[in-house]
Image (tube, rainbow, N blue to C red; front, side):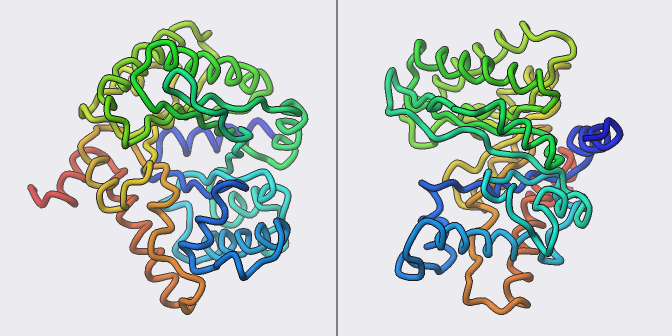
Length: 311
């Protein structure tokens, strides 16, 4: 990837209003995503047909006139999506060349069983080769998710340690890692877990060299503006919020209470979309979803005005 293109990607992610669209459902989450879209398991007979169906859904979203870089900063792709085409172009190239949307790649291979209140990432065999492929496909950065289920100090420490170890490998290839240690929204000790997470995040961020930059993707915290120290740190390009199972309205409302934290939503973005909808209806619903998430992700005073009618 050319240095000038990488600079354009970075500038957009760092400076523009907007949000990241998470279109990276993998094998385990694909059947549920398709069911919500109106495609049942009887509509496909094997994994290949299932992934064809989810690619059709993603392509319909990305090619919609409602989906463009004026409101969307980036999109996270699944590995299979990266290697497929949208309207005759590689998916990543289509995103940037046609939509001015920065492409990211999900690189984790799913989660281990819960231990010490967390689910670490499974090993990622072939990571270096995958990163080389991503660079050839003009991907800007990566995303990897692990999950905190309980406020367990050892577990949270292990989650963050693993995330940063792999992040440094990704940075060494000149890709930008999105670090996603999700705190389960149903965690009974969510606030306590988030305080632990903040501590360990800052410990690792402080150990980065000046040229090692990361993006964080975090659950919207119970304590408003909890992650301000992360947002303000020079090694953190930006802090995004995951919807984590909240409805779109709830996720937007919670997001508006956190200054300079912006959205990277998956289920909240696709909520209400259906394979049965006409293109006109589909595009109108998608446009409404994108606009609400965009407004929730804008600068602090603007989002307060838009959502709370206080101005």
